[in-house]
Image (cartoon, rainbow, N blue to C red; front, side, top):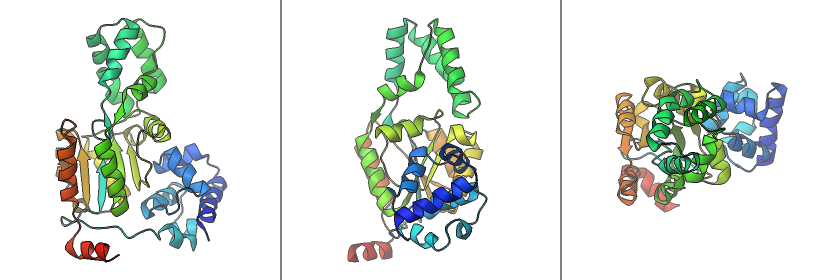
Length: 292
């Protein structure tokens, strides 16, 4: 069975379950663009983590879902293990893969006439609730607009217009995705990851797991989000590395037994080198890689 047939198999199972792509994405914690690409065959070899997430969301075993096609789904380039034992790398988004959105505050202040401190305090007052999925974007925008005394606010658009990719880290993520299982682990508002993937603001790689705080109902550094993130990798704690811009988030992951590295967006080149050093292959794996 070719990759298009593999995608059709997934699509048929989803339709049999009576789910739309959006509904399955929510259950499996996948981005819409990833599922759509798998179903149309654009992602040729979905990782075992991704396929297992879909199967679980559909209430099926991997073999029930894929049958013989499961062999195709898992026939990807063998992944590596670092000298420290890392097999799976989670990347933060804000402050790590994209430069943080403080410019959005400045633009909103200029356009609304509201004081910068009012804008920032209002934002941070509600940010955690939105990132946990406890408050919708519509409600957040209404609260924001009312506080600033303007007719409406579209925070998602302000955010998307303001952020810039951190090129060095995005190149590192693309490199890491060739050799390791990779995922995103972010405190983020609903729909933002899909929007960034669609716009090309985040690298288009085969993410094994995407942990969107607004979908799982927990934010870093709360223990629950790390528990969910760990379960969905299928890896042991010592096999996971988190690259994050927040020390508090890193310390919480370290308490779970993960490896952690802090990303400093003021010195991205130095941070990238530290991550690459941490992801050096185990000697035996390195020899096999060079032999290819």
